[in-house]
Figure 1: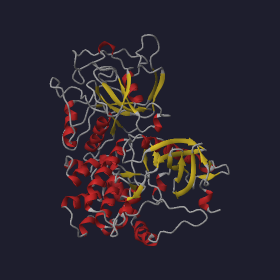
Figure 2 (figure 1 turned 135 degrees about the vertical axis):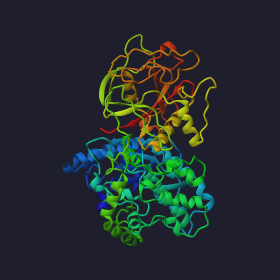
Figure 3 (figure 1 turned 180 degrees about the vertical axis):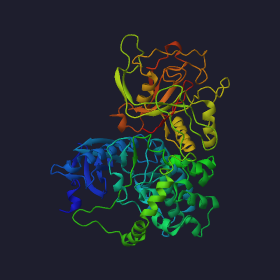
Figure 4 (figure 1 turned 120 degrees about the vertical axis):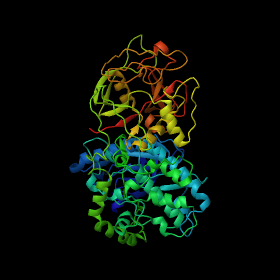
Length: 610
């Protein structure tokens, strides 16, 4: 039996009672992938199985190496967290999750098989993509990857083979990596010292991925997508980042003779900048450079060291680089890549020679060394629940973001029981907040949202009688999440929607049963944001004014759970001016992520340092 067969499930194995394993297709640093068949068609099964941490038992189950059990368990938690985040990305350009679960001592992610071919297989004999397909393919890819970023998920392994082209031509992203860490946890999976040992995809990995000190974020995926575009335009991937660093190659696209718009050549070189600080910080910023279809803010394209410190702290997990997936053939050795020796010489030697230089550059570039420099450091975040200590983050295009207040971690028994509780009130439960976070003191206003809408060319319907100081309404959950992502790019901090637990914890402000705060606004409109009385922690109008979107979702009818339901319903918390005197923090409702209504707005949260 070959090592590959020892580490994989056999053909014909019945997994979870519904998936028959056909064959193992790849064995990576963190997982094994299989093709399988279900009652309604073929699927792809990914099994968490890091060979250096686990063994395959005779029963097919997975056992952890006793010496590394804690690291295995942390990795399993990260795998399942990544699967959960991926299941929440409801875009046709991101592989659709059918199920994710823990079983057999490990975890599984089941996705629907995509009929089509890889982008690498679609390329012409000269290695390029026809010009008329480039914009249609990459504009859709940017949209799907942007949705993943909004969910707190990085790809980190973008390459032509990680992009499938369906038979109808729609590109689909697959092969998202397992998270490097369970954020804010003392337990690390694939600890930082192991990162540089993983086989990343040569030519498509950003420089920060080669260093234990590098900070990955949306800018890392911008590099990967820029490298894929470079391949599609010029017929070759850029040289590996460490080799480019040693050679001083700062503009790989400029070396090629090709008939393409100057803006596209510039966009490729910007995406492939070795320094994080010279790269677009978000996909919307890069899209605007590439296709001239989005607002071009010079500040959005410039890097800030603070933004390199931001992404990932708000999410429960971000994706990690895995080994290049290699085919597994039962009964024989895996087929060799004819280009592997050349690739090894092309990047391993320069990478080793440049290790010290790379570590130093990424260390400085991510702002760690300058964390106490007054010119470059992010504004100090005040701690504690003192309402006299709000703070704001400066925006690169001018002005400041919403006023924020910090909430410390803690737990509180909340909920409502009895005849006087609203029907939508959640039952009594213990709400736990495991890490400090910051929450905006009031709802996001029309004035604040208008700026985002103009930058991103989004439509906005503002009632004529309401001023820019009123809470923004008629925004969907998708709109609110996009605003938070834009605010992250503008400030360099990790903004997002609050979780339901965070929202409820802040709304209660330490009181198990806080009194309701009925809206005093005359019908039919809310008060200006922040006009209502604040709770003891300084947060305004969490019981009334407008209902507010939070990050959580619940399963739709017929789904086993929200975690397995890509079309899950999103949660709104708090009453609104429509509820009038019945407004209460316990009010809870759900609806589709696309729902817009005159009584629904949102506020934002962001990560803070412990």
